[in-house]
Amino acid sequence: MTLAFVALIAGLALLVWSADKFVDGAAATARYAGMPPLLIGMVIIGFGTSAPEMVVSALAASQGNPGLALGNAYGSNITNIALILGLTALISPIAVASQVVRKEIPILLGITLLSGALLIDGHLGWMDAIILGAVFVTLMGWSIWAGMNGKGDALDVETEEDIASEGMSLKSAIFWLVVGLVLLIGASRLLVWGAVTIAQALGISDLVIGLTIVAVGTSLPELASSLIAIRKNEHDLALGNVLGSNLFNTLAVVGIAAGIHPLDVAPEVLTRDWSIMMGLTLLLLVMCLGRKGQGRINRLEGGVLLTCFVAYTGWLLGSQFV
Image (tube, rainbow, N blue to C red):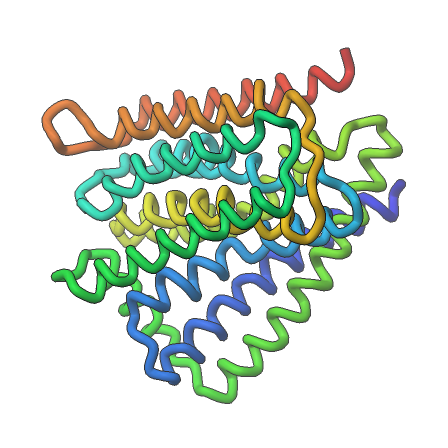
């Protein structure tokens, strides 16, 4: 049991560190290859910040732990909105100025509705994985085309500045790309083993472990990047990180897990976890739209989001010991 806790903590720490190095190496390598900043931001960094969720859920699915795979993905979405945006807004109110970011929330709502429809039959199979993957590819292709043919957005400029500020050589970029990926996989294996062992020893379902400890741990890169963005007064980037991560989690992470091994979905995933995720996304839409067209997540609303996270986590843990 002690060894499992050590593995869980060490796995989480190594996972966050290796994901950061992987993102830096991948972004710098792509830049040297001549990839446009927009593409790097949406594809490389987007995949990179969601890499912990992808690898953990994929490994969990391959090892026959569907609860951990789904709990990690949906729990990360709940954590991103309720904990990360809530904490960020408490530190500094988040102004919503970017039209691109504000259009992404309705899209995320539609994707969340789609994921709920696929959960109704209590099973996520290869056909569901194909549907999720097709929607993901279509959205990515449309977003990249729109960005390449439009006037650009503040997010594009911020992404380019962030990449350029790294100043990493090509040799270092390739090194951290490879090492980061290897460590990412190793850390995920360690984390999954520790989480499953603890869940079995305490009699807690792997779904709840995935929704709480694992979800918070794999969301740490988004928390760090959001706090850094707020410190730089780049509010759109903080919100964009969360929205992009939730899109990746709902489509790519769940799709990859279901594609590797069909997942049996417990009823509470739809009635409890998906419903909370949908409700928080709707609440975020209301906050971001604002009354007069200029959205703003203020400190009070940040407190509401944090309260939702604490209440949901308490509900989850309480349900295991009642």
